[in-house]
Length: 127
Length: 353
Image (cartoon, rainbow over all chains, first blue to last red; front, top):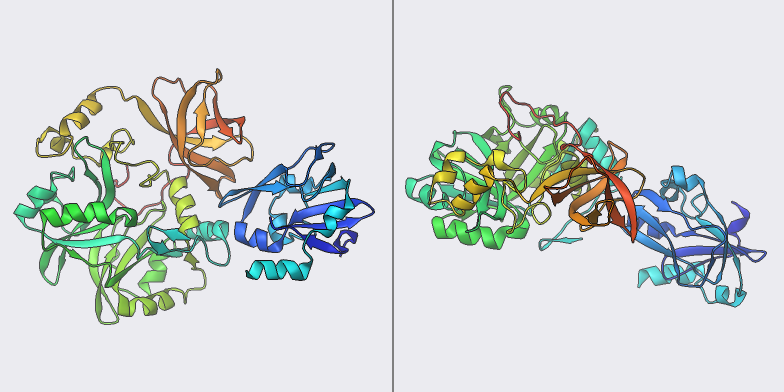
């Protein structure tokens, strides 16, 4: 398990976020990849962009539909997972590790504590 | 997901792409019991009434053959597309018609008005399709299928002591069969078919990507009441003599369309990068003039790119670049002849062109 697995949290838009040293790593949850089905393409965000929480910043295309990916918190995009350019199906295989989508430097760590814990997310899915 | 009043699976556990490839390489089973199935007594008075809507010479339909056709409205627009077959059931001659679930209400109003004793059989018979090059071998272990059976042949066979209607047809571009079977035997049949380890259940998702690769039209997308079969590039399915017959709805409009240039034409498109072409997207020329719309789009597992069918203005010169608006950006797309993937039917004559 990579370092970005530490203290993972979830959004209502089915994204996961983990933070280490003010750097957040973001992807879509395993539940999200299961609902989307085979993922065939991802439009990655641009490195250097400053974004606000809930901004649409990139798109995941599956055989079923296009889904927007939102910034979970305010910050600046500092890295994207270029492996997904050639093989977006990595998200289907390992959504919450190797299938990470982008990293951002966060501006307000308080926003992070507002997100759901893994247990809270599981309960959210059951609703 | 809800589909024409039914709860239908988009895919089973291995996913759309895997189901799609399994049909192209081996075989796959589709439960299409949601579709309409009706039996109409094959008598002259009913045939004459039906010929107002159906652009075929119904009395000349060959026994034990199926035909792709339409119900047409007054303007020659497509009320529905359907498969109509001439077949004897318990020694009585019938027309057996399979039609779209989403059009049951409209279609049945017409069928019943032409033939009041028409018998809807979809509540007592399931309809399954087995599609793919291995279909014949999977099916032969379970049901008697004569070697001479060609694509669009139809016959009565037996399973579990029940009569079942077997047609060599489908909507994937592959060889395959459709089986209309009484409900009480349906589960046994599926269980028997699935004993072959290379076959699997397939959902609506792969059914759509398979038919799109095969360039086949889908009602509600390429076809609707405002589009004639000629505008949809399906004039091959019309009996040309019937276009001179005033008894056929829209006959004048259709025969004029055959002689004159159409305002739109149906085209196949393929994306030049990895973005997905989808139903409803708008097409532009390089001066940002709107030239058409996509009516169906999907990811093509065989081509590993997104493909689409759409309509563009006939006057547009297709040597010029075409752009598709995807999320407010213009992406270059290329014209691709239909079908995208070669059809693989067992036949002597031609069926779908």
